[in-house]
Image 1 (cartoon, helix red, strand yellow):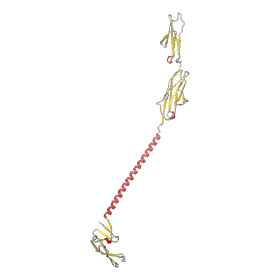
Image 2: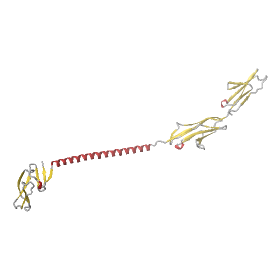
Image 3: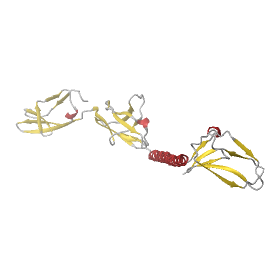
Image 4: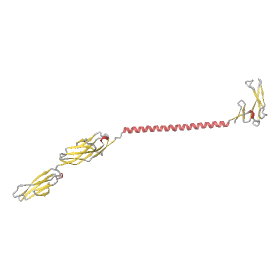
Length: 292
């Protein structure tokens, strides 16, 4: 076993007796003497050793094979790929080592878990998910001993959901269309309101022009002066109702207090119509109209 001490002894019958003993490993000379000692033998010192016995009459070789047993060493765990996996993928972990005799048992463990998660030189996980993320290591064991490997990291990433992406894009597109529609409606209503306001302003301006060109003034007969009306004329009007009473105005009075009444005849009635060159006074309505 590795680490032990080994004594190799060479013996021979000869006459005359053996004069020289020589030791070889393969074809390489390694020592002399009837006894060859190896202290703390290593695994790389396994192999065939030869002893050569010689006297004056000749020489002879004898051989022995050393098989150095040792537990697993240089145990490593490896993972297929980069170790960054997507949900639903498959992954294989492999355990490798050097040992004599060969490893008989491979066991797989996950850090922070007490029991093994698998066995065998390879450990496969199919349809992997986020619960499989973590550090994994293996243990190799033979009849001499055992050794564990360093841990390797397995990272499982969430698989991108293209259906979800499509749904998000569709929702964003719909929202965009709704926003554009709302903006267009607001702009349309604002434009329509502006047009209505302009039309209303135009109508008001036209009405203002009409009102500014037509001025009505209430007339108080008692305060009417003769200076306002320059020309008086009489017209004969035939009334539809002869019984109606009309008032004859005396324009010479400044305040029109001298009023005389008469009953119209059946044939005709005299009435006074007062106007200027631009003004017409409607007696029936009692107002002054200024017309162009």
